[in-house]
Amino acid sequence: MPSSPFNAPEPNLAALGVKVARVRQARGWSLNELHRRSGISRKSLVNIEAARHVPRLETLHALAHILEVPIGDLAASLCDGHEGSSGGGGGR
Image (cartoon, rainbow, N blue to C red; front, side):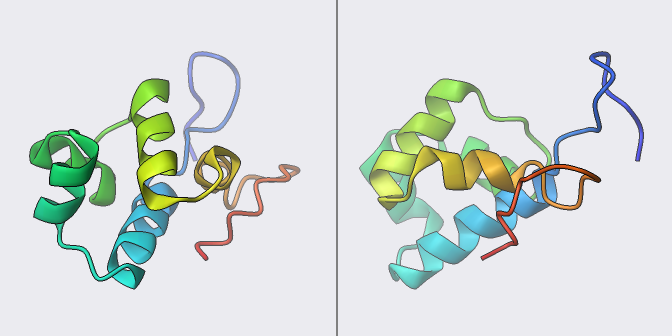
């Protein structure tokens, strides 16, 4: 896994995308519904779920509130698979 400029592994965007998609789908929401409820652009939501976009902290915060999950759960998924991390998002 390539390193970031901060001497740390790259964030696991795929795990975050899976986490957001699973929680959204568990609520029976489409991407359009999540967009409507959150105010986050549909394009940004698609890019987050497809692991093509590093969301800003404000975006993670909004998603956590709208999806009713602790922001720590979303943030932890970014460390899934990192050696020695306590990420523990586990793609749940």
